[in-house]
Length: 565
Ligand code: SIN
Image (cartoon, rainbow, N blue to C red; front, top):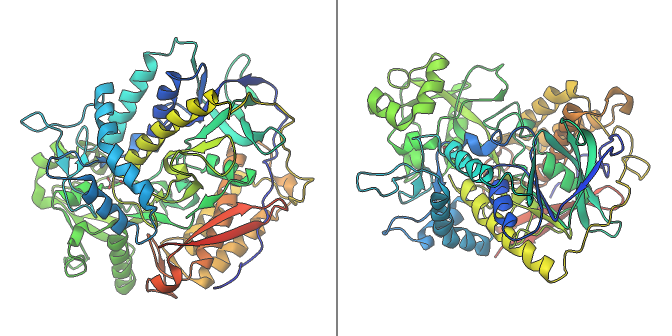
């Protein structure tokens, strides 16, 4: 196995002003997607005081952008066992079976609770939740809302539930609060976070919030690549803070690239319009520039093969034909059906000059989801006492090397609920004591080396390096080049960057990019969402392993491997 391309050392914390204010709660929940909101709402019923903080406003995270839906075995002819099987197959041998069992068996009940809370899913003529199919599923099991606005509806319902209890002194919500780093009690137990709040009155600027437990539900890191379906807030802040604090991170190299993202030209960067897999679920198919169907003969599920298979087929077609996109053909579905079933996608395409009922849609893979993250057990506990994680920033092991379509909202729902059961029980047992405020950790002076912050003007350089070397097609050479490019950025003189939200975000992207690239370099085979062009085949004999990484006390990386049964 190849060794480290360059040696990575990360600081203990980001350079930041000393906290100018403090606050405390029993539990701090960071993030307001399906995972954060679910966790905060449930905890509020069981602990005295919850502090929910979110980076911008409550509905601006990835959840609200989820189109396809939420997968659960709700149909009488479906079963958790079949959902389990499809999830394991998509995860190509690297799922944690117990975590998947928890997901698929608890999932239907949690979705029904979401309905009871007020989420309105699309229904059929008999009033039953309409279920559809997406890549990798052998059953119709995707519940959706507003056609293709499932995440927005779930987000609306959860925020409405939060609004109903906003006056309750047991829960406080702080918006425009970026998590900078984790705090510990001096003995290795996480007991708070430093936050940068753009606010008024007492909570403004950098402050310290203390709690018995911290739950990170901060979403993904899509902005680490030049093009992604993730919103601009997805800069991996929670993952990076956990990484620097020494939490175990697992499967970070497994990035999922969604096959059908509207291609707006080579220079188009940042969040790109997603064309949901559900469009293929309703019969659309992929063609090349000559109109030949790409997926025929490649997989028994053809255009509904797991998304890594579809993304790979598109990338191969693009490579063989020297193009930068292929096409999605949905024209035969007709304007009336498309407008009713996919109102947001049709509107978004039309606003960009494409009409799905008359035009072939240019599409190419783009970053979509981080299958790995902060390693947790089945109760959502990370490797650091006092720290929990759920949703996309976490790695429960449910996704393995590649997430099954529409399992992410479900994972957020199920594991957030588990955390909301675990924390109150541990508080009652005296396992999560009152926080012990100590001076926050400072960057530098601890072997962290220079260059603790990277100026925001370097963000595109990070994104380009990641896309070129640690993107959907990788090799030993490309990952080594990316590692070197990121190391050069990390070595820039520290004086070039001033502390502030954009600088912290960009530095988070750098830190995560360095670690992800190290793991991508070591994984010398093709598995999950990416292709190793120098090792094109899966290699179960050597590589049925999951990689975890921690930042050691000397600030270098320690990588461990665990063989899967
Ligand atoms: C999609 O609608 O294609 C995305 C669904 C998902 O990422 O699970």
